Image (tube, rainbow, N blue to C red; front, side, top):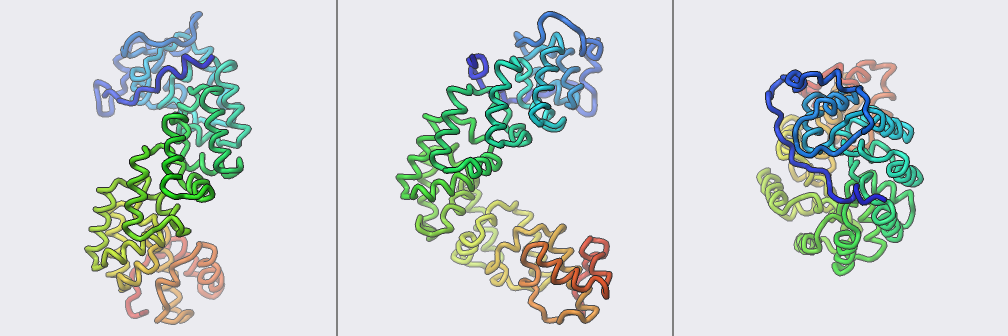
Length: 393
C-alpha cells in the first residue's frame, strides 16, 4: 500500500538553477503560468529526468514557494504536475488537518513529492494517526518525509517502541516536537541499537526515558557515538547517577568533539580553568550550543561594560544563554533608570538582579516602579537604550 512512498528518501542535493541572482526562473520557461492550472487525465507523475517542468514550477509557486525554491523542488524531486486536481486535493487535506499556508510551503520545499500521493488512501490515515497523538502540523512540516513512511511497517511500530520507553503520550508528544526528524530513522537498525547502547552505558530505564524526552535525536546516533559521549562525560566528571547527566548527554548529542574542544579553548581564553568550564557546563549544558561570536560578545559585555568577574559569570552560566539584545540590555536599562532615580542601591548585585524569568524581573523592577518612574517601562520596552551605568555605580 505504501511501497511507492517508502522506496526512497527525498533527494537532498540541491542543484543550482541557471540564471542566478534575482532572475525569475519562469522567465525562461515559455507558457509556465498558463500551464499551471491546465487539466489532463494524469494529475501528478514522476518525471523521467531532472528537466524543469514549467507546470510543476508554476503550481508550486501558486502554493507559496519562491520561483527559485519551486524550480529546485521540481527538478531535484523529479515530479511533473500535469493537472492540479489531485495536487489541490492533497493541499486541501493538509489544511483540513491544520496545516497553515506557511506549513504547506515548508512541506513542499523538501517533500513536494507528497503531491503524488493518493490523499485519501495514503495520506489521510497517516495524518489522522499523527493527529490522534497530538502532533502539531507545524512540527510535521519540519520533517514531512514522515508522511512518506509506511504507517503499518514504520510509524505505528516506532511510536509503540517509543511509548513503551517514554511512558505517556504527553511526554512522547514533547519529545517529538523537539526533534521530529528522529522518527524518520529505521526502528530495527538505528533506534533499537541506540537504546541498547544507552543501557550498556549504565543508564537506568527512567533516565533513558527522560533523555529521550529531552533529546529524541539520540535515537539517530550510532552505538559508537553514544559510547564516546559516555566516555567524554565520564572524563569531565559527569557520572550516570548525576541528575544532570541526561541534560549534558542531550547537549553532547548535538556537538562534535572538535566543536567541544574549540568551545573549551574559547572559554579558557577568558582566564578560566578547564575545571571551571566543565563545572559551568554541568550546571548549564547549553553554553556549548552558543555560537563562538555570541559567547565572545556576551562575555566581553559582562566583563567590560558591567565590570563583572569572569569567575562570577561562570558561577551562574545561564546568563550566557540570555539574549543580549532582547533580555540583558533592556534589563540593564531598567536598572540604570532605577539607580538614577534612587529607587535601588547603586551597589546592587547586578548578576543576581539580571537573572530570572521575565515575570519575576518585571514585577520586581518594572511594575513596582512604573507609576512613579514611567521611564522604567520605556527602558524595558527598548525605547530607552542602555548607555552604561556611569556614575550610577
